[in-house]
Length: 110
Image (cartoon, rainbow, N blue to C red; front, side, top):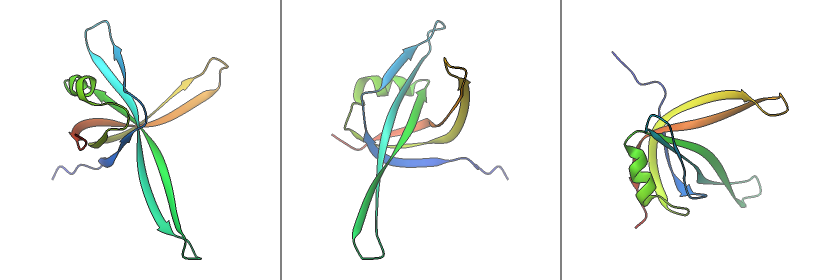
């Protein structure tokens, strides 16, 4: 049995317009931040709301959809997988980022 073990589904709003990068081979990638909201009641019974930000990366044919229709504030649903990478910044410090590599996207805003 082939079981998918790395799957992420999120519904949220874009925090900024997508950044589109073009590569020499003609391929493109889009990246943007997605805000998801959560709420719970604390020990005193007060409602606590929190927002979490997720880094989203889109590649392939789906980039065209992102370029044409996805803008800051739009609500979308995405499905993809978690990826992590690291690099050395200009000061030589190791930096890390976790991203969702999106392979499906559904527009929820009109």
